[in-house]
Length: 314
Image (cartoon, rainbow, N blue to C red):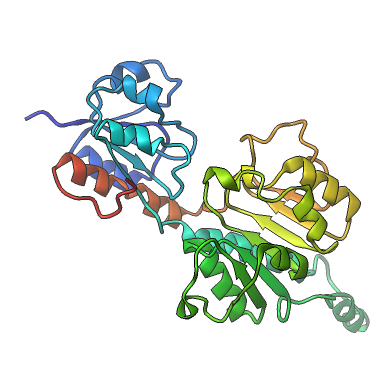
């Protein structure tokens, strides 16, 4: 019996890939590689990550496709309706990278609120006390207000981490969150959260109505010393509005891991601003998270083997 043909368009971890190769005829090709179209036309399975757009046009060129696996959480790059219309299952890894993003978010907040001055050279005994005094940070995580926008898998964990470090945490979400799931965080309106929070961490999903969620009007509500972290979707924050706010408020710190477009436009007004930190979509970039996301291949194989997947996205 011939093994099913499976196409991987963006790299996944070695162990899951090797596991899958025992069951499928696996080919790794980006959408721009020679031979991609020929393989797509006969593939039964497709594994993608962030930058492969699975739309109706691609599916029309994949008549044998039975399952699409997203090694990650967000499904913005996959047209679920088009897949459903063609009877193609979609699977993903909804919790695989949550803690990696929490680590990124909290480390950025901590580094900003309480930067550590490390010794870079020998300090004489008579200078030791002065060096200690000079290293005292004016701020602290403890007692600082944190507003979490979106209390899903990641946002709820950020709220818990903040509470565990003594922060005063509020949240805003489209859903009604059960009190037992708030972990002590208080619910606030979006506007109130933006106005009162020293730290704002954004963890909303990729639905269309979240485009431009934070623009000029929302920045006008924020404190001039706000620390804003966006590790959700690039299009959630209006980059032009962010640049205007950053230039007008030098005590603010804006931290963006996601961008619209990606790679970030070299002419972006955010480039080169001293109070803006830009990272290249790496919040989930730990080996553990990549491995966990790559195990989406288990559900891909389940579908190909006629079984029900553990984490269907359809």
